[in-house]
Image 1: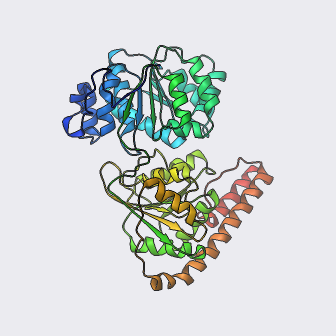
Image 2: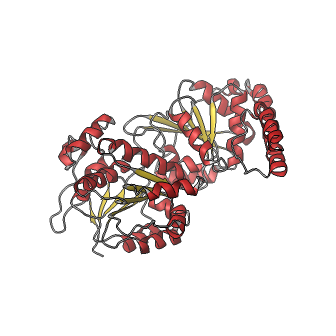
Image 3: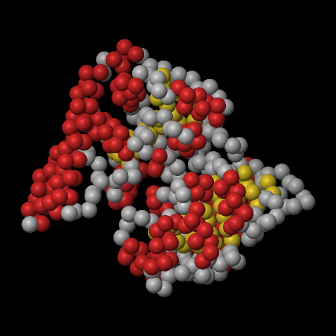
Length: 455
C-alpha cells in the first residue's frame, strides 16, 4: 500500500492543510446543495477541522484515515460524502458503518437520517440487546445505510436469509481503536472477507495504535491520512481539576460539588456497574435528578436513560465507560471522574464528553490515597499538571450525616432489588431485566401483580 499522505496533500505537491477559516461553508468543500441545506437546518454553520480535511478527499473517491479528538465532528466527515455519493448513484445497501457500542450506532443513525431526511435515506441499526427478528425485517427492506456492531452483523450475515453485502460501496469503521480493543478483530476480518474489495473505506480513530495500523494495511488502499490533533490532546476550552480526598469521603465530596455547581448538567463516571447504580440511588435519595447508564441495563433502559438526559429531563448521568466515547450530548457542563480510570487514555475520552464543538466545560477527577500513581500517569499523558478544585472542607463535613443516611438507604434498595430479581427468575423464569433499582420500592407491587397474572 502506498504511504499515507499527511493532511491530504497530493503526493509530490505538499500543500499546507486547509484551515477552518478558509472553508466558509460546506458548499466550499464540494457538498451538494441539498445536503448543505440539511447541515444548515441541523445548525452546522461551518465545517469542523476534520470535516475540512476529510470531505474534499472523500468526494474525490479516496480512502481516508481520520485521526481526530473526540467531539470533533467525525460523523459528519464520513456521512456527508456517503450521502453525496448516494445521490449520484442511488442504491440499496450502499454503506456499512461499524461501531464499538450500541449507543454510538443509534447516534450515527440519527445523524444519517437527519442529514438525509429530504432525500429519503433509510437506515437500519443492527446491534445486540434487541430482537433479531425485527432487525431481519429491517434488513429485508434493504436500507441504504447499515450501522452495526461487528458481532451482531456477523450473526445476520450467517443466519438471515437473503441478506448480504456483496454490492456494498462504502465501509466506515468508526472508533476503530476501540472496536479492536474490544476484541472484535475476528469479526472485522470475517466482514472484510464478504464485502467487495472494490469499495471506498473510511477509518476513523482517536488514536493510531499498532492494531489500527494493521487494520489500515488490510482494509484501505492508497489511503490519505487526515490528522487534525496531536496525540492524546484534551480540548483547549476544558478546565481540568483534581481533588485529593480520603476514599471514605468520596460520596460526601460528590454531593458538595453537585451543590456548589448546581444548575449545570453532569456526567459522573464510575468504574463498575454496581457503583454506578449505588451512586445513582444515593443521589436520588438526596433529591438529585440522577439517572444511571451501564452495561447491565437492558438496551431499552440504556436508551431511555440517554434520551432523558439528552432531553434535559435529568441533570445528572452516572455512567461506566460504556458511555465515555462517541456519545454526542451537547449540553454536558461538568464531567466528574468519581472513580479514576485505570487506563490513562480513557481519561481523554471521558473528559471529552464536555467542552464539545467549541463550548467550554469543566472536569474534576477524584484522587484517593489509592489512586496517586494512576493520576500521575494521566498528568504525564496529557502533559500538564492539574490544579486543585477549590473546596471548603468544613462545609463538606457538614454534609456527612445526611450522606451517611442516604448511603444506608441506597444499600437497602440495591439489596432489595437483587432479591427481587432472584425471586423473579425462580418464580417465573423471566429474562433478567437489568433496569436500575431506582424507585424499586414503588415497583415491587407491580412485580407481584405480574407474578399473579403469570400463575
